[in-house]
Length: 200
Image (cartoon, rainbow, N blue to C red):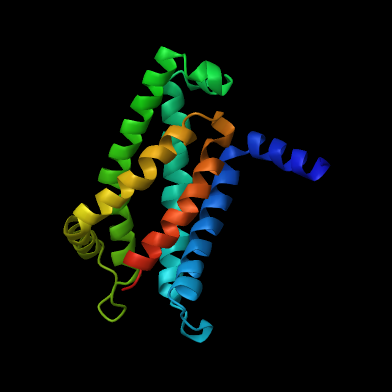
């Protein structure tokens, strides 16, 4: 339909704005799902600080930083357009393209492990910081890094189970579609992360 094609065109023409909007709404929605459906929290007891955590993390990290490195940086490091524009059967025979796919996947998994997870825990520490003592950036960073280290084994195992296969798909589709496809997987991942790590 014309509305579908007009949105697709707008998304191609405005990939950053599209990604910021999707990331923010998706991440907040995943937290709402985790709170209201999975944990069965009554609406009156909804944790708005937690919702703010996920919405702000979605906007800044998943919307902004992820766009910067997965689209802008990867486009400079790898010849992604040649690979992603091919039919799937041709991709499977493209040795250089498959090596670039493996390199993108390895790089992304490193970023997820070494930047994404600690950033999430620092955001969490900042959102849940004690209002009575005031916001202390150094304390939030220290607390966030401690939580990251304490949960690393379980978080890393779960991260690899989800993102290794997801990255192989995400880095195989055209650039303009890369992050919207990723957000589909990320919705489930974020609901899980909210359920197991979102509470104070």
